[in-house]
Amino acid sequence: GNSVTQMEGPVTLSEEAFLTINCTYTATGYPSLFWYVQYPGEGLQLLLKATKADDKGSNKGFEATYRKETTSFHLEKGSVQVSDSAVYFCALSDRTGGGNKLTFGTGTQLKVEL
Amino acid sequence: DAGVIQSPRHEVTEMGQEVTLRCKPISGHNSLFWYRQTMMRGLELLIYFNNNVPIDDSGMPEDRFSAKMPNASFSTLKIQPSEPRDSAVYFCASSFDGQPQHFGDGTRLSIL
Image 1 (cartoon, rainbow over the protein chains, first blue to last red):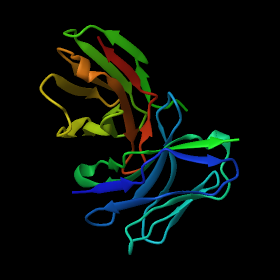
Image 2: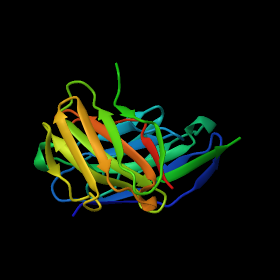
Image 3: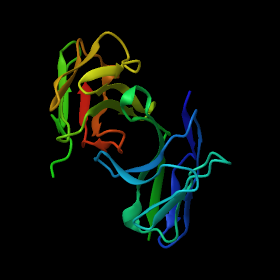
């Protein structure tokens, strides 16, 4: 079956530091890949996505590249801010059944300090 | 545009009581998903519907849980009878034709 593995948190960084959150996946076929972000007390929000190999998703300074050869979709940001503190979820989609079923990783908490 | 709307935002009840969680998906979306989030188990998919039809309910923990989608604009998740281990945040999400899912803000459920 499908699975997503994320690095465990919490990840604690100083403001303006470089961020990498690792994500690897196992899937049949060619899934789409996503990063979602969850701020305290809120639901998950789509941060970025990539639908095929070598695609780069980007949003709000965050980037991730769909690497089929390494089955990875690592999230990066060059300079984090305190406001980026949240939980980040890597996910892949499965179109089985006509829907868009997502398989999520366990989430990685990011804490950014001044 | 209105997002996915869940109600109530918070629910506190005693064990044994029936709990009903409600979800209004984004208008025009044809897939709806119910998730449960806990510290121990993370984010779990309970059930999802496509065009109001349940497609995969393999994540529903046991017969005490049931979900319905009587029309394209409304879904319920019921727990009867409720137990303390059901305490969690329950999220509803919707999507259209394979596009990314949009999540509601969740219902925080506490069973005493």
